[in-house]
Image (cartoon, rainbow, N blue to C red; front, top):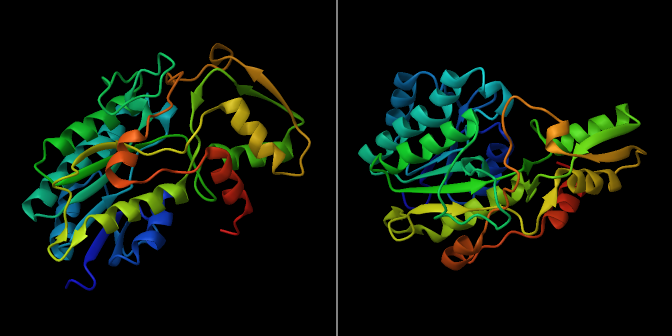
Length: 297
């Protein structure tokens, strides 16, 4: 049992989940749950099916990388966002608690208002301005109240070689357009999905003992993003510089690019707590982007 504990990974086909398959495989037997291509189907709107799956597998660790992330669409689908981002998370947390199984869950910079110009600390007061942010915050609360042994990793501006993300969208648009307007007054830290998965595996490795995985001394919320900061315009320029395309990028304001959901203006997260507890610090976002754009997969 100690040699190969079972790790149940929800959301195995998402940007972070896909990378977690690889990084967690050295720490246990990864069983994936999600939509197409996973070992088991998992419907986050059907709690009975989740209960049956978790009890049947009896994992030593649950990692949840599922989220409803269509930020603008969430404004018109609040019930679905609530089911996936909050209620299912609380339900899995309670299952985990009943099985004495620790759980890792991912959250977001959108739990903050985005006002100000100082990197957000874990202890700063959340004040989400969108349905997406409110449901993700409720997911955090439900997990914290579930009785589970948990870690919540808040990340931001996630991109990678698969899924729907800013980098892939830009690479496509650079080929199609001669010029683009890009928002230049929102700031964050573009974070490569593989670096999130690698950091998660390091945390799990540190939390493993003869007794299994335990977060009792380190339980709580941690910020996990790349070092540095960028505007979307700066991020787009960096992506463009790694392609052969010739596209003109024009900086615009948030007001000039209206969206259904409010975006945080400043969502740089402070990662010092993670570094202090686990000794983990992600590289600068430009380094992560160069690695991602240079990798085959």
